[in-house]
Image 1 (spheres, rainbow, N blue to C red):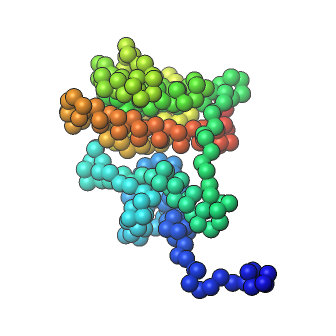
Image 2: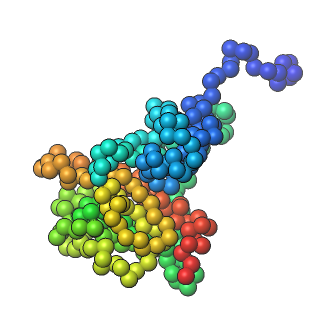
Image 3: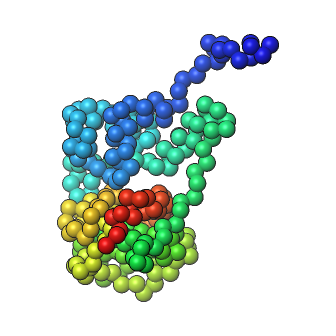
Length: 270
C-alpha cells in the first residue's frame, strides 16, 4: 500500500501550471518583469534595456497585460506613448497562489517591509519625490515614506513648476486615511534643492520626468495620473485623490525593502 501511495499520480490528477509560473518562466518575459520591478518604462526604453526587437517586446508585454502582471497608461506628457508598470500587488498574490498550488506548506505570506535604518556616520538614505506642481502626488509620497519609516529615511519633495499651495484634497486624504497632518505645508521648486544630493530620485509625473534635473545616482519613474487634472469637485474630485493616495501607498510599501538592500547601502555611502 505504501508503494502505491508513493507512485505517480493518475493522469487525470495532472494540472496546468499556475498562470504566473507560465508567464514568468519565459526568459524574455522574466527580463521584462525584472526591468519593470525597478520602475515604469515606455516600450522603446524596454527595447533598449533588453536588446530585443520592438515587435517581440510588445508581444510579450501584451501577454503579461492579459495575465494581469503589468498595466499600461497613456503618457500625460506625450499621448503617443504609454508607460508600462509592474502590478506588484497582483504579482505577490499570484506568486503566493503558485506556491500553494504546488504544496499547501509552500503558501507564501508576504513579510512586512523592513524599516530602513540609518547608515554609517548617521547618514540616512535620502529620497526625493518630484512631480510638476508639488501639490499632490509628490508631497503625498514624501509624507507616506516618512510616516512608514518613522523618519528613518530623509525625504523631500519638489515640483518642476510648483503651485502656490498643496491641493486641499491632498491634505484631507492624508489626514483622514493616514493620520498625517500637512496643513500649512508649502510647496517648493526643484531648484531650491540644487545643492542637495539624493540616493533615490523618483518622478511621479510624466512631464516632470522629462525636465527633472539630476540629483543623485538612482532615478526611477512612477507614471501616475494627476488626481486634480480632471477638475472634478466635491466627493467625486476627492475620490481621485483617495485612489492616488492608495496607489502611492502601495508603491511606498514596496519601495521600503529596496531601501534596505546592500546595493542601496552602497549607493548611500559618502
